[in-house]
Amino acid sequence: MEVIALGCDHAAYGLKENIKEYLTGLGYEVRDYGTDSAKSVDYPDYGIVVGEAVSRGACDRGIVICGTGIGISISANKVKGIRAAACSDLFSARLSREHNDSNVLALGARIVAPEYARSIVKEWLDASFEGGKHVRRILKIARYESGDPDWKQ
Image (cartoon, rainbow, N blue to C red; front, side):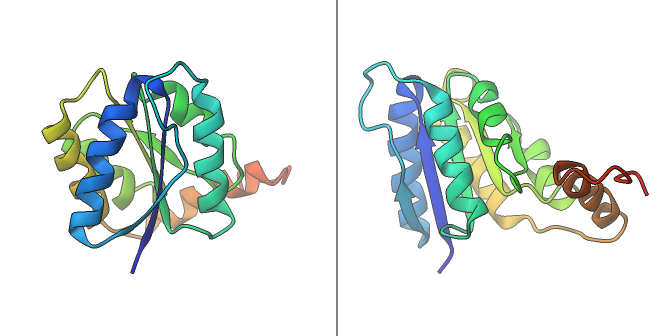
């Protein structure tokens, strides 16, 4: 069973709970990294902890949610090995997996309605990395991230 890490800030607490129920219904194991209320918190705390869970292999993939999906995706992307994609449509969600091998999906609770967010999550979960020419590009990102001065090679 695939394990999905889930995290959000206060603006997205309701959508996180909705997505958690949806994922559980689809048969995924969900690890909820918070937050646990609509009380104001800082989105980096949750983007980074979900990114770390995915990076260290405790979870297979992650979903992070804040008001726009932008701040929390930037935070998650600071974790080595994370390729978080902020998506607000089905096409971007699918291509973030097929072309970019995204391992974290970021959603904006103030951008997408809950039912559409579920559709985005499903599209992202069902898509697979295509490999091919995209591998070279993912490897360049990884080499740069590791400090390789010849990352373009």
